[in-house]
Amino acid sequence: MKRVTLWIVSTTVGLVLLFSYHTSTSGPAGAKSAPGVAPVGVVAESAAPVPTAAAGRSSIGPVVPSPAAAPSARATSGAVTSAPRVAAPAPSPKPSPTPAPRKTAATTRTINGAPADTRYGPVQVQIKVQGSRIVSSDAIVYPTSERRDQEINSYAVPQLNDETIQAQSANIDTVSGATYTSDGYRQSLQSALDAAHL
Amino acid sequence: MGMPASLLLRGPSLGDVDEVVVAAYDELRHADAVFSTYRDDSDLSRLRSGEITAAHADPAVDEVLALCADAKRATDGWFDVDLPGGLDPSGLVKGWAIERSLAVLEQLTGVDVCLNVGGDVAVRVWPGSLPFVAGIEDPRDRSRVATTVALSAGGLATSGTAARGLHIIDPHTGQAVADVASVSVIGPSLMWADVHATAAFARGREGVRWVESVPSYDALVIHLDGSSEATTSWPAP
Picture (tube, rainbow over the protein chains, first blue to last red):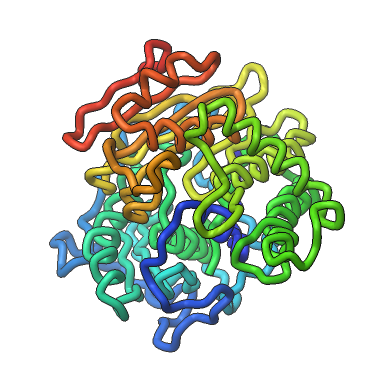
């Protein structure tokens, strides 16, 4: 059994700003999410397959299930569940997603994560799930307000989409390398996973 | 705004972990309340502004500042919390707080713990259980994992400029440094792994050779051209 909890440690980012320089003047600590984020939770279900072509900056094609998936002591099937009941309240508003019944592998569900406030602004992630596998992840809300933000996002967001898929298929438990935007991304992805009851 | 703490628990039964998990997060929250440079009401901010003296601050302040002095000595001055902007022990506090949080989670007998706070990872694996697999981000292409390392105990910390740009300063010159792309350090203590990773990054190309001389710690340096170099005991993936 394997369980993941994830929680935003409010302003703990201040702890790691040693040697830092400020890349953005927006987004004071504890700021609420900007307007314009999408509804949280399961937003669509369909029996149609996920499109294979990468459209625009944020779509990713389906992933071939890893042949190295799930050796003995690693996660049992479907046991990667998150525990929002454990988590302390997140700083951003996080409406309870509607619980979704498990679907067959042929059904694709589209799930929006709760927006995560990053140093650069809100980031919100949408994932598509077939069965218990993530087949794509898109950042649907990301900061674009300042030039530096755009620089960051121009490389960070699309690559992070790949990272999610890669980490899943490579069976990696965790990733070392601190970031801001991707931190928000992960948090939002995690809340999408919560909603999916993966 | 905040930094996510991702906690992965693995064990035969995870029914009654909630109370301990909350206590573990409380450790992180407490460290933030005492040491945040972003909160005017933190003990550290009040100390910096002269509003209080060390004697009136949370006892953790004394403990951390003593560790900072140890870190400066252990790194020949390459890790220094006395910054141009004022005293800032953030680079050590993060690892210190993660370790305290992990210590709380070790109460969970038989439960393997992997705690990742902002890219720094501390783990605890019980005898007979498989290690956790940590990916080390490729600093030149963050969609990729440059390599992986199996962890059963201790910590893994990475210093680099891929995410935040130039932010590590050579304490001897006051200039920002980026002679290498990233430095990852593993060892029995995450706090010290983090200190050594920061110091090794500041040392630039000499960093990995220096970590070689630090007992029980190993480093992997990824150079600007993508090549990598590791200490002799760095584990093969």
